[in-house]
Amino acid sequence: MSATLADRVSSRLRDIQDFPSPGILFKDVTPVLADPAVFGDVIRDMADRRRGTVDVIVGIEARGFIFGAALAHELGIGFVPIRKAGKLPGEVRGLTYDLEYGTATIEIHQDAFVGGERVLVVDDVLATGGTAEAACRLLDEAGATVVAFETLVELAFLPGRDRLVGREIHATVVVT
Image (tube, rainbow, N blue to C red; front, side, top):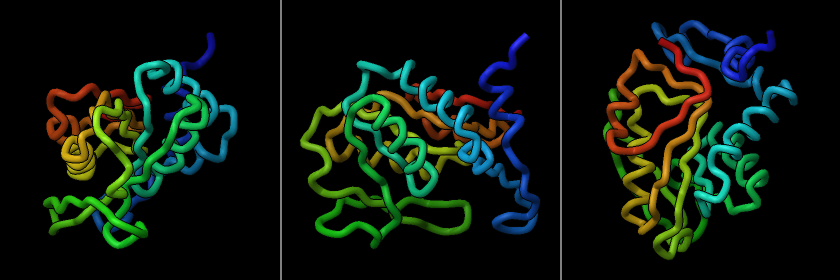
């Protein structure tokens, strides 16, 4: 019997204790990226689910860029990065949001959307959901239509999904 994609991805995730701070168990996705067969299968799986339903892929800094850009290439559509404040040149649209330890600001280019584009938001891990929620709000404010949120790993024991109520969410691997 062949392993499912979720099993193959899970077997390549690496746990890093106390990163980026004490008490955190970090899910490192870089071994997935290093395996061309698994990484390719992940991108094809995401593409098969979204083909014909989205116009643009939006990737959240930083690992969302990797998955998002590869997915946009596979689908033959554009890619727009959501970056931390001060990282994009030119005119930007931003949103400041609360984190469990303070605030953060994310930005997109002011001219990234004209309105009505069907967007898929992509990131590597859905954890507490603050950045994912802010990204979706920023895109809503820019006039885009967020079709869904796609992630490689969802940490279901954290409230990320609760921050995206009413939005379609898909995770390749769900960690309980």
